[in-house]
Length: 562
Image (cartoon, rainbow, N blue to C red; front, side):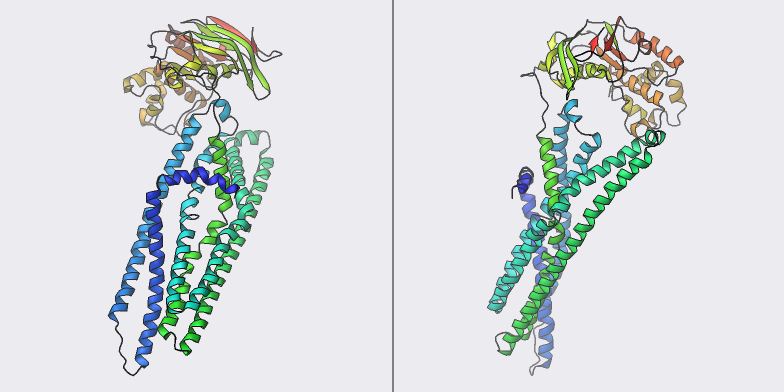
C-alpha cells in the first residue's frame, strides 16, 4: 500500500477531469451490460424456441425477445464505439495535461539540476513515462470497477431465478476478480517495476551509440558498447518474457474460473429444472450469462501484471517534481527592459561555484564596464562556460553574486534578463526546420531582407543563394544538412539578429577555416561596437578583438584569472 501512494498526485490530476472519467466508465459499463444481456437473452430465446417447437401448443412470442436481442446488439456496438472514441480522447487530454505539467517543471530547473541526468533520460520521462500513466484510468481504475459492478449485478439477477446460483456466482467470481487484480499485481510487481528502469537504460544506450558512433568506431569501443547494449536488452527481454508467462497464467486462471462457474450454474440449473424450479430457457440463460462475464474479467490480468511499471513511473515523475532550482534571491523585480542602445555593465563579485565536489570558482571577481569587450581564455573544463551560464542565470552561485547593470541577477526575472542578452553557446543548437525559421529565433519579426543581410555578415550569403529553396531550405535535425562551420555561423547570425546590448560568445570561431575566421573577426569587431561583450575561447587568436583578455587557470580552490 505504501508503494501505491506514489500514484496519489496523479490521481489528483485525473480528478480534475472526473466528469469525463465518470462518463467514460458509464460507457464501459453499458457495453458490458449489453454484452451480458445479448448473450443471456439469446440463450433464452434459442432454447425457448426449441422448447416451444416440441411443446403441444407450439406458441412463443418471438417479437418481444427478438426486439430485446436487437436492442442489446445495437447498444453493445454503439456503446463500444462511443466508449473507445470518448475514453481515448479523454486519455489524450490527460496525457497532454501531464506532459504540460512535467515540461513546465523541467523548464523551471537550472542547468546544474538538469545535469544530474542525461537529456535522453529527461526526454524519456516526458514521453515514455507519461505514456505509461495512461494505464492508470483506462486499465487499472475503470475496468475492475466496471467488472465488479457487472459481477454483482449478474449474480443478483441470477439469484432472482435461482438463489443458490446467485450465491455460487458471488463465491466464485468475486475471489476470481481479486486474483485477477491484486494477485496478478503482486505476482508481476518486481518484473514490471524494474522493467521501466531497464527500458530507459536501453534507450539511453541506443541513443549514445547512434550519437557517438564516430567516436566509438575511432576508439574501437563500438563492440564493447554493443555488448553492454545486448546485455541490457537480454535483461529486459527476460522481464518481458516473465511478465508474458505470468499474464498468460493469470488469463488461464480467470478463464478456468469462469468456465467452472458456468459449469456449476449449469449443474445447479439442471437440478432445479428436474425439480421444476426453473425452466430450460432460464437455465441456459444463466449459464451463457456467466460466460459473458468473462468480457469484464478477461483483461484484468494483463493490466494488473503491469501495475508495478505504472507505480515505478509515478515514483520517477514524483522525484522529478520534487527537484527545485536553488535561488539565492528572495524577490523578483519586474524591471523595465534596457533599450538595445544602452550597453550594460556585468560584474562578478566574490563568486563561489562548485559542481558536486569539484570547486570551479572561489572568490572570483571580474568587472566588465559598459561597452567593454573582455576575453576569457583557458583550457576545456576550466570554467569558461560557467561564467556565461552565471550571466544568463542558468543557475545561481553558491556564494557571492553577479550584477547586471548594477542590479543583482537574483533580483531580476530570468525572462527579463535573458531578453537583454545575446548568448552563443558552445553547441550550435539548430532545429529541424527551415533556415529562415532557425534564424528568426533571434528575431521573430525579421524580414527576408534582414535575414539575407545577416547571412552576408557571417559569410553565408553565397552558400544560401545556391540552395534550391533558399531560406526555405530545411537544415535537418540538429542542423545535420549543414557542415559544422555553417551551423556555427547560422547560430551566430541568430545572435546578431537578436541585437542585444550584452553579448556572450562562447567559441564563436570554432570549426571555421582561417580565411572565414579572419573575415568574421572584422565583421564582429564592427558589430560589437557599443555593446558589452564577454568573449570565451581557448586562445586569443580564436576570439574577436578584445579590450582586455584574461586567462583562466587552475588554482588550489578553483579557476582564477591571471
